[in-house]
Image (cartoon, rainbow, N blue to C red; front, side, top):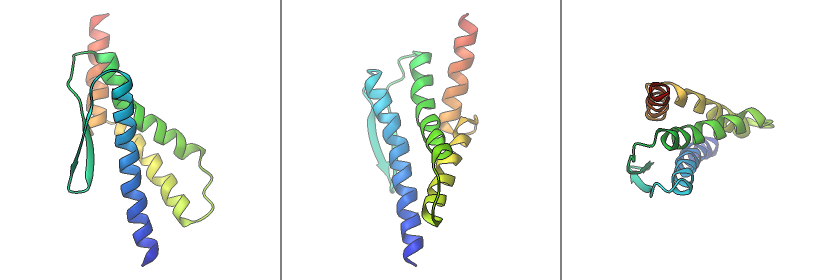
Length: 115
């Protein structure tokens, strides 16, 4: 039972880290991010200033960093293996049916159109 509680805690913590990376990146980019929490699901919002490169960097930062961390992890027990798997699933955030992937795709399309 305690392993399941730890797994739930790890999941929530990684969601918070994921959104925290978005928040910090948006803050560094000067986008004035806001952190909201809806039923234990944090999310970051910022005003879209139509700057596709900044939107791309903010959207890709978290999946890129957490996937990279997952690749580098060397799991020694079930909980670190679980953490590694969760980090690697951030790779799915590059797909356009996720909110991160949608912003990434739209930003890339807009950047390509401008050139």
